[in-house]
Amino acid sequence: MDTSDFVLQSVPPDGPRPLLLVRIKAHRMNPYYFTILSMEFFGPRVHWTGERTSPCFKAREKCPGCKLKAPGKWLGYLHCLDEHGKECLLELTNRAAKMLLASVPKNRVLRGLKISVQRTEGGKHGRLCATCCGVVPNQQALPAPKDPLHTLLYLWGLKEDLDEPWSELLA
Image 1 (cartoon, rainbow, N blue to C red):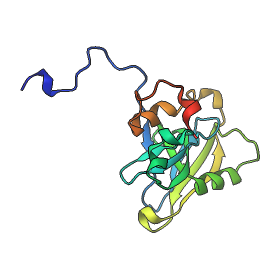
Image 2 (image 1 turned 180 degrees about the vertical axis):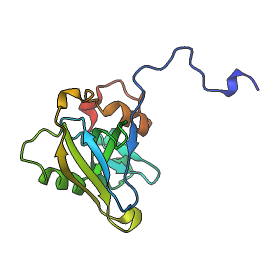
Image 3 (image 1 turned 120 degrees about the horizontal axis):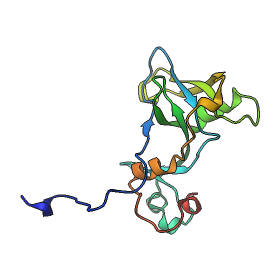
Image 4 (image 1 turned 45 degrees about the vertical axis):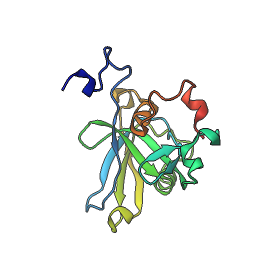
């Protein structure tokens, strides 16, 4: 075995470490609790290609999911603190995001909200539910919000693929 057997880089990769992505997949008796650090949802349209989630691109000719005629949906991502105080990226479905927004005053910034998230019975087929259950008293003490795009590009396997600005490519 020699060095040609390994993926090597002579320079460390750029960018911060990706955040832990939290997907609530199973029902549990007690909800999960999070404190939102994001100001609002980061909500890309995505495709399930049968193997992984991939973003939907505005230019359909560049979109692997559109080329495969894969089903698409909206997912909302929030930079949060989990119940142990660790930073994470929380993924919410369209339904759970609407439920969360309905539980807070209209036009309220999401930063500083304490939320509970739970999946109904039925395992991964149970419905995801999210509601506001309080507000952090001192929002200035919270960590700064992070853009979830870096983490999502890493998870989608697209960190280095395109030269164009990502915000302009996503549908």
